Length: 137
Picture (cartoon, one colour):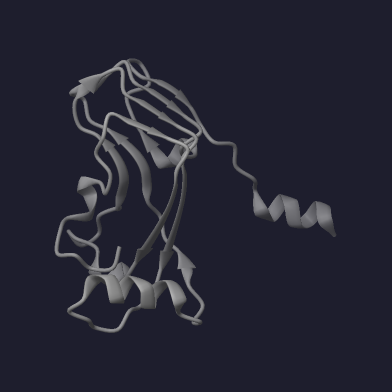
């Protein structure tokens, strides 16, 4: 999200079930709040037995122009022709008050923060691009 004046660690989606979605997070790394935080896309704050499955997150760092219109700023960021870099995000964050959840294929091992002793978790497989490039040559 281009700056909306809210903390990015709070999560952009807070619901009990999220299945089969694609999230495009367009962020200006200089606007992430609090400074140094890792933005959270899906956050399970409380409840028992939430189900999160087959979600895909792409997060890009863009440097947007100042705008009072949040929608216009996001559209401009998506349509920019400047090269954008990936930005690290937490795809799923499960708070300790939320237990017995199922999180499947919604982020790599590093992108999902959850107590694995009280939540079922299966990571989305990842590809090591360096190893893949060497094999392709």
